Image 1: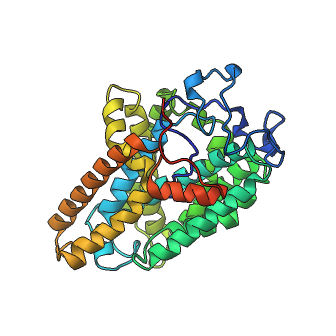
Image 2: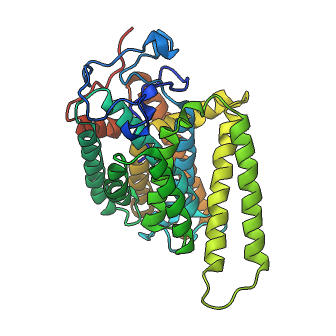
Image 3: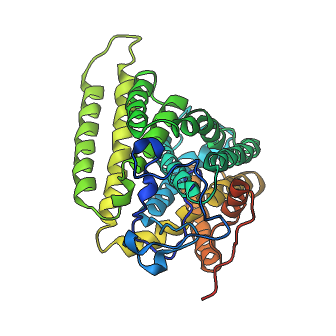
Length: 379
């Protein structure tokens, strides 16, 4: 899935403390993305003792894996399949109806968009320390994603990869020349504008991309595994805002032709998504962390592979096996559960032997224009 932009390895789950999270315009501490570095994709950097990371955290990208992002991605992948399975089976589009009743298929879009922006900036930060032209690396990655999305669109017209690739090239890539305060300001402007204008589409994706990028450049993602107070307080704020927006939606009478119902509904959904994200981050700081990691991280680490194969499996179950997925809610839920279970098992077993999923490996190859290792290093 699009969020799998993180050039990380699975052996360490500590938060990154890499000083290059700030791009050149963010201050003197940042390394220039256009400055040649001594490291290359073939010879990974090792962790500096000054970084505070143990030697075991010195991986192929020099950055330990952020498990919380894998868990968020895996959880969102499950929600996306549950929401879209009937639409895929019926060859429909992703935003016209709510095929599973009150389960809103829109909720997965904000999380994946935010994760994509985060992954983009993390990868650019990594590329800046490894190659002389890091933005070319990101351009190749987006072009490869566009090609994958165009092929996927032949099977599922409602797929999102093409939109992510296009918005990434038009918004995210140019934003790397901006200071971080400008990126944050654009995000703060685009997200409300998208909500006022109808609640979604490319404008909202662009705003959430930039928000994710800003979170990296301001060092928020560095702390995502370290704090429980921040996600807890933010989640309570989001919950209060979502409840208020729902109350306004239900109780405030609006005239015909106004955009108030759409705005409040979409705002409530966006805030509710924030509640889900914050709740997961809080739970990851509890004894439930090992269970959440075991269930969702394998799916999240192979999100692109699982996102694409889910389409194939749904179409096969509907058109070849003949399951009434598009007509029966029960059949849809049972099929989605079976697909996710199979994908979890495959992902778990695959990642025991390989560094990343098969399609993630091909995407990484296209990104770096050099074949990366697939099997795990022997120790």
